[in-house]
Image (cartoon, rainbow over all chains, first blue to last red; front, side, top):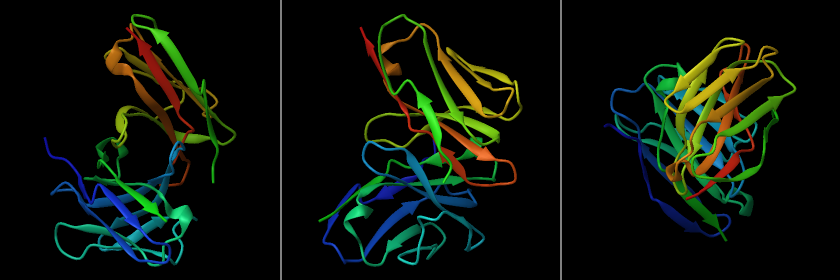
Length: 114
Length: 111
């Protein structure tokens, strides 16, 4: 069964450093998403991406965040200058259409900012 | 952001028992979803609901879209150990695209 993959599984970084989280969505999917889950809390929507541009973003997704599809397979989330409160599990998801039942989540990247 | 409250926050039940959990909001949603999250993994979609009053089943799971469109419940019948995990509801506002997730219900099944 096709699946969304994410790398790295864990990342530890110093406050103020830039991090790039990588995702490989399912190959025939067209819509891509990033979510965040702070430890013990609910999943929060960050951004959705379609046709090489952001289609929707939440209030969490400020100027420190950016997304990119640098090639035909990867989808990345960049945090320019990490803060302690960016520590969380970051999930990538993809879907073939905007119909949500086709949205598949990756296993997540656990980011720890020290 | 929107606040979706789930109750109970956690449940400890014996294997074989039925489970019921719900999700409420002060806003009206046009779509409700229920996800299960295992430790260290991403959420997996269980059931999607699109119409007020809709009742949908997926094996031992049954979910309903509340008539007021402000709530939804999930029932699990005859629980088994692999039902352990955190269950999240998620809702989409009318006219919106993003989903708001609930606070989660942690389920523990005692063999």
